[in-house]
Length: 319
Length: 298
Image (cartoon, rainbow over all chains, first blue to last red; front, side):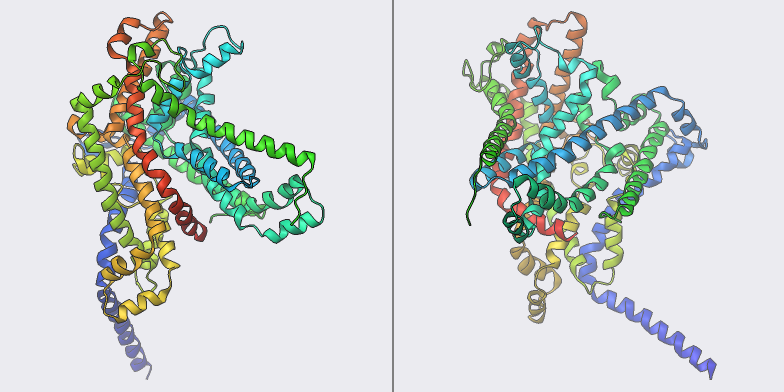
């Protein structure tokens, strides 16, 4: 009795599995349209993780991953004794943090101000103009920064001299202590307008009856902003903040590479560029990979950490 | 509804409009300034003081650029890269997004997880470089196209858009005997223009603007793109800053007269920027609608 029951179950399972593959075969068109591309995504997103093995080796390009000698955690020991590494880490964190804070508050404030504009044409025009730099490459932005801050004929120096703030033009791009500020302002100029796009959509979606009720109760413009608009933006803002926190160490390298030069390197060098220098400049691939790996692990920990904090405070969270 | 206007309101409105106008000027000025410099005689431009209008009008800078064979072929390659890359990327991304929007697709869940996680996984620059090398993709045109063919984020946005389309449309097409390919290309794509236009713009701008893959993987001059050429000129100029600043604090005038890097740079920047300025305002009405539907659903 129990025997027959058992065998009927296995045959049923067999039918189910057979049915699954038959069903899958019937979806061959969907498979054709997805499998090659998912494979491509796996190849270029997940397979490079295999390269992390290099961080535990004395990798040489000639021998490859399979032929190179394993050295355990030697690269990381070296990393944590490397003074330049900590300077580079400081630069990365400082610039990311400055961009994160200015971008976060800047975009919310600009969205609130744009939301107060009643003339639709004016609002659209300002939006259109301030979105432009987002679509322009960092190469172009770096050129703009160079021309605008130039000590010979750049408008910033010309205005500073005309208004009597300085007697001699300042060579902004040759002074390390200016680099973080210039980098932050350039990034803000590029992304400020574009970063309002989500906040503006949220503001449009807020219930207009709430505003009208508040108006009847005698709330003025600032009270409405403080008690309706800003709380309405909070869930989106917190979510974006969490997502951006992951980029604190991950941050770009393009902007630093293009804006920096050898005079300001002490302030402009970031983790990725340092890794790149080591790998291709000196040929120490393993050390470069150790830097990249450190970076990836920290950024994932940061995202998870901030996510947990947000959960605790009852705010929206990503995971 | 009666709008009460008190003094505070009036001041706020005025200051707000003035501030936003200033922001617009600050955003536009650098482009206008570069245009003026590029249209000015290059030797005269060294004297400085060119802001909004050229002082000595000349098209010479642009002539020099277009007569330069390397720059000319880089411009052609940039156009080809953008067209080919955007077209292939869009087709493949839409196909993948379509399969993920089909509820009956058996691998849907698995593929969704693979795609979403890929947003958070990053092996880093050097392992990626080694992979490209092992695939023998360096010094080929395809290194510009294949690695970035599928953008996970774009797949998610397009999928979300497809998912909110009325199911009945696809059902009736299926009853009429349409297969998945024709449902996608004949039924879904024609009614998904906002999101397709948005993603097209993003992908095309990404291709047009990229130079780092060129810098890292392709050393052959014949594979050089325009942004990379501009980047090389930029790097030369910044090195000149450091060299001249550290040497004497003064710029070497003789050298400037021969190369006039400032004017060439300005003209190249304008050439690189103009296609974006021409396309972007027309796409704007689509992308606000397109990105919202995709992003809000996530």
